[in-house]
Amino acid sequence: GISAQSPKGPRTVIVAEKSAFPKLAAIFAATPVSVWRDYLTVRYLHSFASYLPKTVDDANFAMYGQTIRGQKVQLDRQTRGIHLLDDQMGEALGKMYVAKYFPPEAKAKAKQLVENLLKAYEADIKTLAWMTPATREKALNKLHHYTLKIGYPDTWRDYSALTIVPGQILQDAKNATVFEWNRQVKRIDQPVDKAEWGMTPPTNNAYYNPTTNEICFPAGILQPPYFDAKADEAVNYGGIGATIGHEISHGFDDQGAKYDWDGTLRDWWTPQDKKNFEEKTNAVAAQYDQYEPLPGIHIKGKLTNGENIADIAGLVIAYKAYHIALGGKPAPVLNGYTGDQRFYIAYAQSWREIRSPGTTRAQLLSNPHSPAEYRVNGVVRNDNGWYAAFPSVKPGDKFYLPPDKRVPVW
Image (cartoon, rainbow, N blue to C red; front, side, top):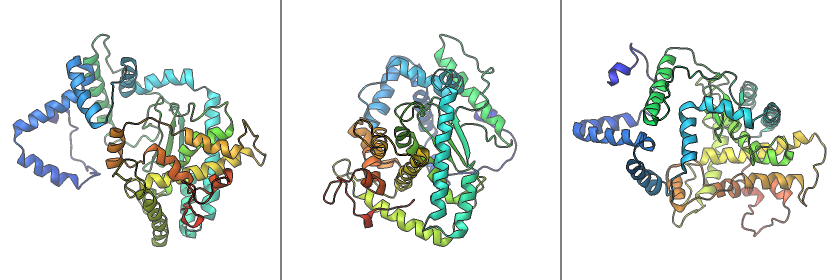
């Protein structure tokens, strides 16, 4: 039972979303045990649906894939198998993945790119008009203590205690769940392992963790079209560079301001800094409130504000880092495009996607990220560098924003 699997002994529990518990308690009190039993049975079946007979899997996809997310067809068997392996044994898969797709020279190139972005942020923080001197000093200290995790971890996870039997996928999935539970229980009351990764190496994503002041870029996102060690610098900085800049900026937004250089929960902004920052973020929120991706459904400026700010900051800083990489030398003109133009084109290309109206609708209602189209068009119109790169953009054009309406957070 649950009590047998739970860790023993008294301890302090951190409740991240305390507002949910009174409501959950009320639901518990008002709901018959038989209903809870049925609910938990359905949730259990949902969690293992991919490994159960096709009728169960199809019913699960019809509900969660088609109805909720608007997917037309189920992913193919091979792709789902890879996702399963990444979910349950991600570092074992990652070890094989990086051996084939992420050579040492790619890691070195990515590391240099990140370091140039940090240099660009340092230069920017030193000149930010809205940041007070006291806060600027703390911001620089925090930046200097960023932990970089690039490509893959230095030490691979040991899966020797996980039993896998070919031909018994359901049992294997259960074994993997128990293995991960036991691994997490062993971490309780132990020092935080800051070397541990929050994503697997094949993951096509990145993150900033304020509690450890670290930025992580797995090998999976350090691939074309975002990053190519042999590609033009403009393409790399416009692609993965903007993403890295986005993640770094989270350490200095209204949420990052709550965590010190070592991840301690400590507010290091002055009231004046908060006021200055809020004035800028409110202006960005008002911009995004005007966007209407679907008829009658607008982007929620407040909900998406943190990510929109990070998108703008990431692109602006990546542009400055690109010019650091050039070292004062002019970029070549390739295929008729200047280096700056290729930088912005690469940024736009990195967000290309095909998305169903149902998926877009679900995102607009609850996701803190704006739809991809607006992560490009809503961002570049706030960036003075974009107007300089494409001087043909003039007042009256669809994406033109007057200089006094642009929001230069960074």
